[in-house]
Amino acid sequence: MAALPQWLMRHLITVEPYLGNSAYGPRYGPPVQVRCFLDEQTRLVRASSGDQVTSTSTAYSPLAINAPAESRVTLPGGRQTTVIAALRRDGGGLATPDHVELQLV
Image (cartoon, rainbow, N blue to C red):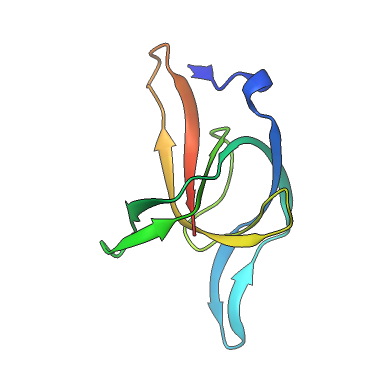
């Protein structure tokens, strides 16, 4: 299993994993700083509901990240966004750059 090369992970984001809803709104875990490659490009993606939504950024991060859909993410410029989908890209032992693709609102 080959991870994304460290030299490619030029950006630092802060991820607060979504824990569910409470009587007071969404609950998040403690913030964790994650090295990633951030692609700030607008594109259409599918949300977990099946609807097409607009993604404004995509972060490519290590497999160990915990960032389920609806997690809160702070980008390097300070903008806060939400995870639409966290897609695990694991080659299963093949020589591929294994990572998690975070599609962000």
